Image (cartoon, rainbow, N blue to C red; front, top):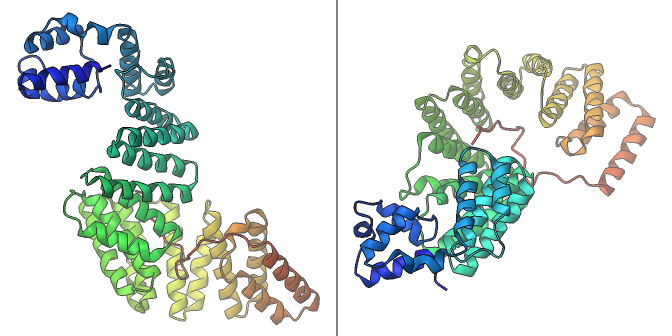
Length: 436
């Protein structure tokens, strides 16, 4: 049986009318398009106008409307509640629809509407399931645009569930479906940027760099200044991770300029700190130091996280220049911050221990490594690279045989119970990524 929209479309085409001609004086061409694709139901008055324009009695459509007006009202009410931000109530209305759905509804649209409500209400498990339903319905109808949307938003739901590996798989499928469809969807840019960001976090870094480069090269889709800044920054970080430091410096500078042009001072500051890291890693330590010292008076007093990031990067830069006392002062200052994430805290303790040993302060080195031990006992996944090597160095310097034996046993135990590590690690640095 034809849906209401299909019947209106067939009658219109049989009379050689365009959607604009059918809509003239009573609606918009966009509204007629939505009605014909069953995205919305016309009011009784509009349906009478459409029937008159098509030269038929409104009773022609009664069979399609019979038994469906209440369902249509429920669906419209659910959409209205969703637009008002009452997602739980909207979901209750969606669930009250008769299943299987009446022929007036397109399943993929209902799946997406429900999934969007679940996503916005914080029920990411149900959102992921409904977006999977959108993918299934899109394949069933040969509607690849629905398939692309289902994969993309399904990836977002999985990111909220901290299932990033699955999210990457879904985004890759979204890219494949979009390429196969030949469609030009604005969603394409979001898909590529989200996937590139995940590659940047988890690897492979070569793929992240290539994808960021491809995004910058595309001209078909407009890109905001902020988005372009994020892409330049991602390109810079991925380039640095594969050792292309001059490329990283160039694109890091572009990111700073674009964020400044957009008035995003906080995001520009993050990129500036990372630019200091790119300069240091590229062999320009003196230039990096001057660049970073210029940033000290430009911080908001409330931005402790960026202050810690600056102190950390200055410590690494002083270390590269052989100014170990200055490096240790910066690490000590960073460790005084009230709130530091466990991964960065682990790196700071290890750097403090390394600098203390280089300066001959073995007591301070031991204190820092013990603090790191306590942190790792709670979160084994935050153990920084080189941790056991510096533990061994300290034990050997102290010459304690029992401690040496204990460390050997610990190393053997660690090899038996390997903690999953990030597939890549930025050289000597955990970069501060702008929000996207």
